[in-house]
Image (cartoon, rainbow, N blue to C red; front, side, top):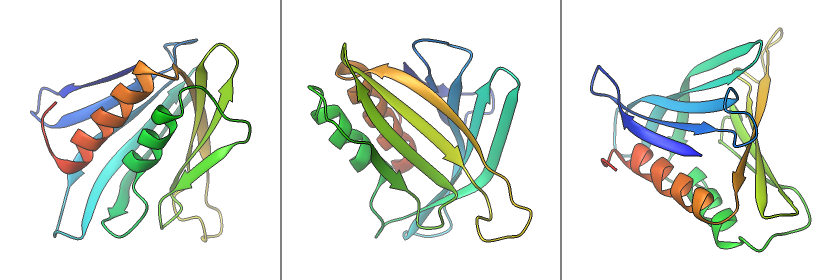
Length: 151
C-alpha cells in the first residue's frame, strides 16, 4: 500500500509498504530541483535487518519516467508473464515487477549508488501490492511527488 503526506518539515514523501509484510517498505523523500530538466530525490529501503538510502537519485525529463512504468503496470491489472524492468539513467535506482496469481504485483526495488565505482554496494527489497487500485494509487502518488504537486 502506498501513502503520501508531508512530514514535520513540510516536505512531501511517498512510502510503499509491502502488503504481505508492512515492515518492508520504500520511501521517496527530499525532492528538489536545480532546473526544469531534472528532479532529484532520496530513496530509502527498509526491511527487517536492512536500512539503505541513496541521497540523490536523478530523474531527467527525457528519460523513461518511473510514473509511466508504474502506470503501465497498473493498466495491465489482469497480469503478465515475464518480469518487467525500469531503471534510472544513472542506474542507481531500478525496479523489476512480476505478477503472481491472485492479482498481486511484486515490485523489487534496487538501490545501487555509484554502480561503476569499485567497492560500491547495492540493496533491494520487494513490496507486494494489489494489481488494480493499489498500483493505480502508487503511480498517482509517485507522479505527484516527482512533479511537486500535493496529493
